[in-house]
Amino acid sequence: MTPPDVKDDTYWMERALDLAARAESLGEVPVGALVVLDGEIIGEGWNQPISGCDPTAHAEIIALRAAARHQNNYRLPGAFLYVTIEPCTMCAGAIIHSRIERVVFAATEPKAGAVVSNGNLFEQPQFNHQVEYVGGVLAEKASEGIQAFFKRRREELKVARKAAKSEGQNE
Image 1 (cartoon, rainbow, N blue to C red):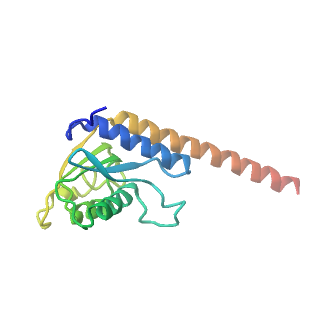
Image 2: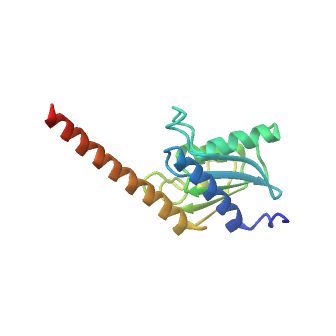
């Protein structure tokens, strides 16, 4: 199969959603990211802060690190980053510093998103690099995955609390 055109955002977002599923299989919040340059994936990542005991191990950061190693350069001009949720402040800062050309995200993140939801970091004039961005690509699919994850997590916590309470009463 011939790789899709560089601008085929849906194709690349589907790949990022596959990476999000990998995060979920590890008990992590299902977020996936990949860096594409000239139609080739040069870095990919999925959330790993819990399993890696690393607060910076967000999908975007892992994908940027892999891409930088691939390019043997901390700057990634011309590269696009695809991520299943709007980047947070930390990730937006790393994206700006790495000189990513364009970010495509699926779902917005009303609490921590820093691209359109809070802060609009890519539009701040004080930064010497401006990042193009597009949001909403496969947003419903990404949102459903994250919502299902947290619903399942709340249900598991409820069952665990009930079991602990029951066990405490039996002692």
